[in-house]
Structure formats: structure tokens, C-alpha cells
Image 1 (cartoon, rainbow, N blue to C red):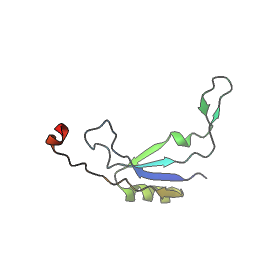
Image 2 (tube, rainbow, N blue to C red):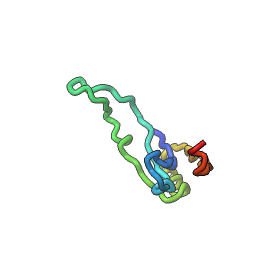
Image 3 (spheres, rainbow, N blue to C red):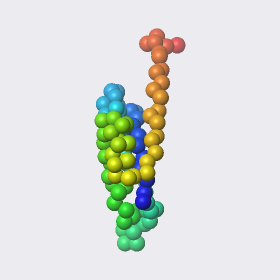
Length: 93
């Protein structure tokens, strides 16, 4: 049985706001390695669980789902936000 990973999405570098960063995501770890298809050369596997990405409003809801389904899981803590305080005048130094 494959395990699951629960995490919060970090803010994308192309985003100015923090939309969808408070959502918790449950993602399954790959059960088997990907291998190239002999005909096309594309990487893939028969494991379809790695295509699933479940979203939850809170960490408690995500862990409750994993426990209800009997999934082993690990929680990846959200990265700490660091503020880069800079004055407009610093651009002209």
C-alpha cells in the first residue's frame, strides 16, 4: 500500500497574491517507478494513484480522511514566509 503526503502549496513565484495557498493537498507517493514506453518513449507507469490530488480546507480534514481510509501519511510542514522589507529608495543606491 502506498503512502500519502499532506502539504500546503507554497506561493508561486509568478503570483502576487496568496490565493489557494491555505488549501491542504493530499497526494499519493508513487508506488512504482516510471519507465519509458518502448513505442513513444514517454515516461509512465500503471499506477494511477499518482494522478490524484485531493484538496482539503484544513490539515485536520486531510488527516481525518487519510485515517478513515487507512492510508499511511506524512505531513510536510509549510515553508515559513520571509518578508523582504525594502524601501523604494534602495533601488537607486
